[in-house]
Length: 168
Image (cartoon, rainbow, N blue to C red):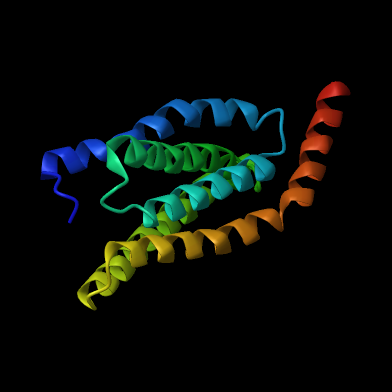
């Protein structure tokens, strides 16, 4: 559609995983000091902005315009996932960590499968790729709303952890 070869197209999406690789560890460390739900919500906001920006790509966008959009998606996802996983793993006692891990893996797999099916259905119905990006942005808005609903709960838990570590 935009005249890129398959290899060039792959290179255009390389900033996404690279950004996750760079931002993810920083977000994990930050989650110990900053409200993890706030970090996750910020990451989801950046991901939404990146997906909308990708949905607006056209023939005039160019390589640089595509690269920053995919990088923004990766930064957003990299900021979202580690604090979110940390909160899920820390929501139950350590002896239940295997249960939490299993639920996280199952949920991730179901989400990935549902996402692929949704994108496949949209493309099979003749929708342009932009429609799938808008669908992705829309579902990410739902995730953002869920994440924002837990910000105050996570702040209380963070304050309690800090208070208990000071008393030790």
